[in-house]
Length: 154
Ligand code: HEC
Image 1 (cartoon, rainbow, N blue to C red):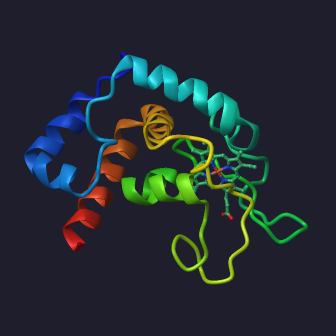
Image 2 (cartoon, rainbow, N blue to C red):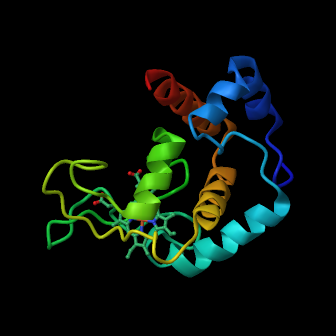
């Protein structure tokens, strides 16, 4: 599929009420320009690929704790669980890291850095849009659904 166009997801979002999606701070299911995806890819290579893998494949044996007790970086493609989280959570984790008590259990120690001091909000959205552009249609629909559900709970 050409980059930047996700007609099925956009149609589903429209049916469910695009206004509600936008009100919930959702954007991944929306339209993304080719330029934004290109920026996202560049930022991914520079800031994420070292841990999450050049092809979003994650670290080897990513389901097993490392000797220091911490989890390796999971894949960002369909084989991981990035697409299980709503937009606001993906944005928050990328900006702040896996903050214990917020995005992780209290006392949780993680190697995922927060990028709030490195990337602007727009850059974080672009890098996440790039990641989402690599998901299957099924994963994108699921992720749009959990985003809608989170918005509805507010
Ligand atoms: C220094 C290594 C490192 C870098 C660089 C890094 N991450 Fe991570 N990331 C991790 C680790 C490790 C985890 C899993 C943390 C855990 O479970 O404790 C993680 C988890 C995540 C998660 C949660 C995934 C899920 O399904 O729960 C997201 C989202 C994420 N990273 C996004 C990013 C983005 C976007 C970038 C680049 C801007 C990035 N990460 C750069 C190490 C890294």
